[in-house]
Length: 251
Image 1: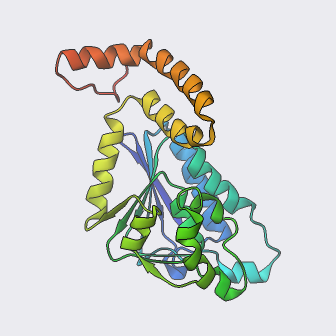
Image 2: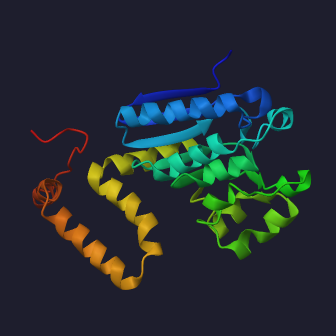
């Protein structure tokens, strides 16, 4: 059986590539299993970032409808994949050079940063086959206000990259996705590993806190980080007007 997901870890970055071109990278059981294995590999290698990209003209067409019609539904692998992309400590970047449909939008939306080609189109087509964009609504509605995605979810009509950017579904629209992703990865690697991890965590946690609870928690985190070895190293480098290579451990 041909491999559908390829994972490479290089220079502290894990690149996970969806390569099930015969069905437009549909979310089959095998593809999801191999996606989980790719995330395992990234975490075992302590990668600084995960880039989720694809081969072929589509990033992901959504659920594998043939599999769904042949057996009882089991959403567990999909739910777990979305949770892992959202919850892994390392920043995740979706690199999208082709069409995204249905569940593929949920996969993309689970990443912290989403870079799409300016020609990319999107559609939440679930209602047109008699179901709802249920599972993927969780990551989508954490990025996009419900009123701004309602038309797309209720009608299944396609929308473009400009619209996706304006509503907050994607973070970057680019003419050259690969170079934009490379610049973002370089930016992530220029930060201290723990500082980046804590920043990803607070981006998700602070909006759900009350104001006063957030100030308490963030003051504690700030004090801890400023008293830590990374801050000492970073501020020494700042005073010396030199950059820190955070991928080289402190001697």
